[in-house]
Length: 120
Image (tube, rainbow, N blue to C red):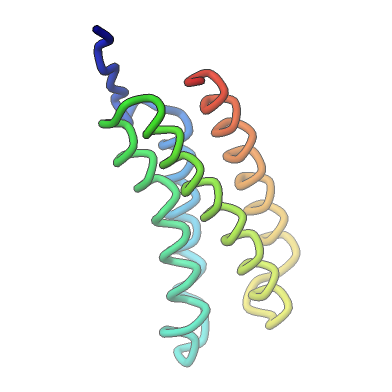
């Protein structure tokens, strides 16, 4: 009989970095035009919040199920990267902001994939 190992998501570096990215996105959205509130701003907010949220939800599951939640979190991170490129194209963020966020997202992706490989 195997026991179900649970992870304390608040102690996971991937969750902490995901939350940091979410907060960074929240900060930049304050500067977005009001007309984007229900369009790009909403999408950026939803996918950034999805990253640490899926880690938290999956942490209470079996490792196999947790891996699925990590896949969703990773998908959200790739979606976020695309939406940031749209924001840059629309001149809502500058090159420096884009590069800083892209670097954090890439680090999140590397760390999450490494953690996920350790579950299997």
